Length: 325
Ligand code: AHZ
Image 1 (cartoon, rainbow, N blue to C red):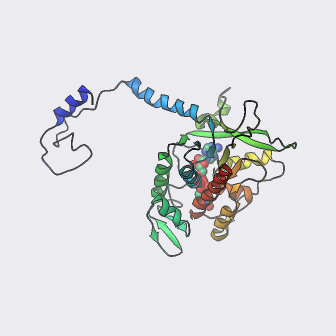
Image 2: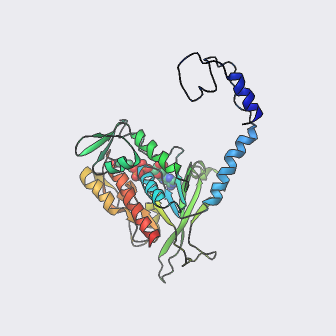
Image 3: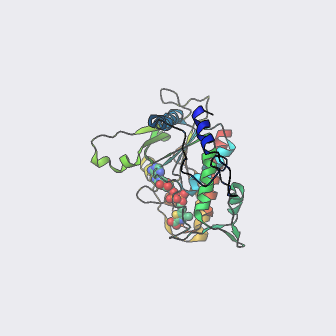
């Protein structure tokens, strides 16, 4: 404790007059806050505390083992499972929005409650989200409780970095090396979202990249290492949504974007889960969540979120198997 801190605290140490307990009770002993002070700080110290860490993270995650594109309910669920099982993997999450969470801050339309069909409630139990049990389905009292809980757990893992306000605007590709025209993904092309949205207004705002692990300087695979993977969970089509699905079908000549079908809860949730995971056409590419519906032509489910968590878990399991083999 610095001398200044001690002086500040001593000045504030007065006899407690009431029984109100809060985090500062030991520092502020009465309800008179007139002398309250913070420890001193230079403005530049605040800048450096943020920027040094951010640039260290950019450096550390310039080569990542798992790149998750999109921090909605499916991407965050997958991130949780991968980070929990493999603390040695570097996991970068890219989220175009300032606020991570995608559409899972509300249960549907403007309603608070989030519905999950069983057995997705087992994921809620694991991460510690309380719910009401309605028999075949469960209800979380507010979707924000699900999202904030999973998000907080994911961000606590030391091997996860969330880069928000950062859009993926292309994929890094390399020849698959099998003598055909096939390609593999080897990273993502990133930019500040506001720049991505304003490219037409600026003459040149070149992007940055995050490369997948397991490549040599000449761009060929290092056979002695496991190569990294991209998991795309950018949701259904929209201003940003279905980003990698749209890009990948323009790269993979053998596939077409099937397009999300109309709402059918029962078929949609099973369909998204079954079709989530690795993408057959392009090595190292995985999908989960509603982006799968666009890619594989599944129905949409509307406001039931079980398939988001479970497709994230399934894709995570396949990715974990890849790194375990
Ligand atoms: O901002 C997007 C959102 O947070 C982000 N994203 C999209 N494109 C991106 C890009 N770079 C970086 N190019 C990008 N981030 O991806 C996130 C997607 O979250 P989401 O909640 O939209 O998708 P999800 O598949 O995880 O959950 C979908 C929830 C839905 S939609 C639906 C229906 O319409 O019927 N039903 C459910 C349960």
